[in-house]
Amino acid sequence: MTEPDVLFEESGTRPWVLLFGPVLAAAGIGLESLAPGGASLPLWVGVGLLVFLYTLLLVRTRRRYLRVRLTRTTLEQGTTSLPMSHVTSLRPVDEEHHGLRVLGDGPVVPRRLQPVVLRLTDGTRAVAWARDGAGLRAALEDLLRARAAS
Image (tube, rainbow, N blue to C red; front, top):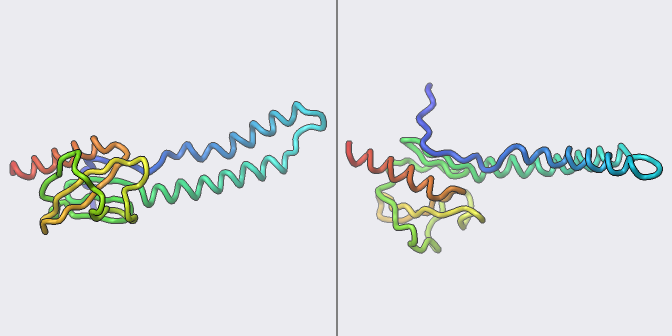
């Protein structure tokens, strides 16, 4: 089975965030080694490990629930998948989106993400979202334009 053409994709977060715990531990060990008595290695390794595990949990959660993927056939928002055959058009950028059904797993558009209002085949509207809302809108417009031309 081949991978469908991906027109737009956001992973939810960047994996380099996982380096925060080890870098914090290394900086703590380095600074504390300059103090009288030397560094407390087990303490800093424990702190680095705890911060790493916490950020690992955050990264995994964000990659699952804030993932955006648009192909020619589906729009995936978090763990929700919407067939593109159900999308008829995009609403204007400045259209109010409060009170509309939000795609994904939450009741509202996630913080710091930009909404894109869609009109569906049943006449209702739904809100898609992405960190790069303009990029998602452009990819959706191109896809709808190509579908209308064929």
